[in-house]
Image (cartoon, rainbow, N blue to C red; front, side, top):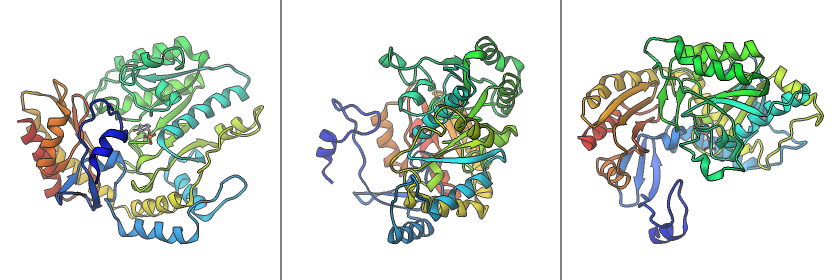
Length: 419
Ligand SMILES: *Cc1c(COP(=O)(O)O)cnc(C)c1O
């Protein structure tokens, strides 16, 4: 592979063109292993950013893609429908909380978030109210497109760079009570005050249920989410749950909302939807939201991506959801969680470690100081694992199929590298 061309011409995520860090060429992947061009096989601790839950090169997912490829890889979705999309939407309506009945398919997580925000705005417009604001919490992450970024943590996503263009929304203090800790009502006070003070302007609350992902890998108390739902109900404000990272079993529940036994008005999903095979996302809405949106001036929801409902992506998503429906993920994620609970506290004793936490198939090691990316990345690869930290966070969310000895190699590599 021409790595020099890559360095000089290919933009990688959040990477400088002036001083690009080295990239590792992957030739193929199988199960939990990435095979590098130099022949080394390393264990993927990231599931390619939350997505590859069943592992790479999965025979059933491969077959689903091949079967669909021979029928049609794509056809427009305006005025046309097809079996892979209908089947997928039926599965999603069945799997998600009961009130969510209408499915809007889109291309990526960020677009699913854009769609959810537009739905909320059109909802209020149809009701004859001007509600231009969204309320969220700090340390959230909802994507990199503009509206999604506008509800992402203002410091992490450097809102200052886009001042004057980026809409300004309302940020409450992020939840502090940890998932398994004691609940303290004060935790939700700032959120409550901001909601009360601005409720007549707020279209919706958007939040990642239970786990704040890319904004800090924070795992918070389910009661916070319960209170958010109660407050939204009290003021008649819509609740958008961004389950793009947490959906499909990652936190030990099929959807993280279930930890708090709540149901949102709108839900965004993506990432693991196709088992990590290709990009696809969806925004689900209740019948009330969908019908209200479409009762307004436009008479429809004003969005329609070119590749909406891409049959190839839908077919693979159907195969991925069928694997989930077999139910093995439940035990797999529980086993991963148990093993993380046994191995992470040891890492937590290291001096440079500030905190360790875990939930389901997510393990987080938070350091006092940010890592040296180039050094630590090389150390991990030399230890036979793929773990990509950011800032002070070294974290893993492996494929559900990972074996105990492979997971041990991930946590041992973290221990050794930080020692
Ligand atoms: C990754 C992510 C997104 C954005 O998804 P993309 O597919 O990268 O656009 C949005 N919300 C959450 C919670 C995410 O983790």
